[in-house]
Image (cartoon, one colour):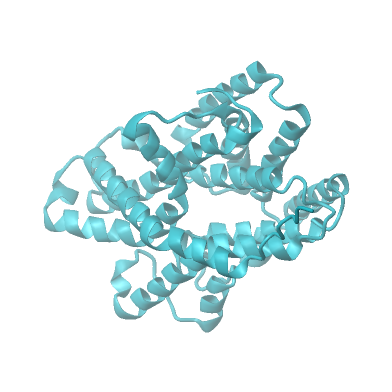
Length: 364
């Protein structure tokens, strides 16, 4: 790692994306192993695995950073339609495909999922439209269980698209007032329905702070490098210090112990240039490219891999840490294959087909 100019920063972010995706997978690998070994003793995984959902907070901060970094010069130009089309092409196709697979599984193999599922038409529609719908008490996840995070992403994209019409400074102030005001409303009047819960969640501030990172970088360049790297170290320490707390479901607590350290981590990492050397280094960058597929496909790969390990007697007989490693590796491989065979070629084809082409300059 070394200091990075702006053009090289996204590669280091891909590396962080790989870590974030695998962190979430480790959590679900661990909980699935514990379901098979409820009396399992202490393990290395138990020290940090239950905090794996912090990977989602990293994703949210990264998303805010990338959107403001890539579209820094698009404010005030009325490019909201193009922006939304690009975002839809990026997140929707593979998500809709896997959601359809999940729907088929619910119909034909319902035992594959840990939580109960119903076939409420409104819930199914909300799953495809990135709209949170409660289908059972305290269960607000869509068809693809991990897709609840996509509801937040979609809302953030809609807000950003609405403000792209305005000059950057006015837009940033407007988005800040909207998100901070929404959180304040949620603090004064907690909501039970998943839709207003999302609109007033502290998690929205993670997108906002990620955007601030990009704005500061564009304004100050690579100055204050020592301070940013020190912040990265502090963020890593704070995140590790939160591991004994396990899962954090409360919005405020989660924002403080996972969100703010994630901001420090992203701020430091995106100021570094990652130069992969050898197959191992390139593999992690590739996992970052495939992180979206890895995150989504775990809904299927983990129960499938657990079934195989169970038939082999490994899931109940091998140490917890061994199972967590095997399940995580299997999911990383499944996600990479999904990205390589489905997500990447489909995304490229849709971009060529649907995105308007920039007019070529005519040389006199």
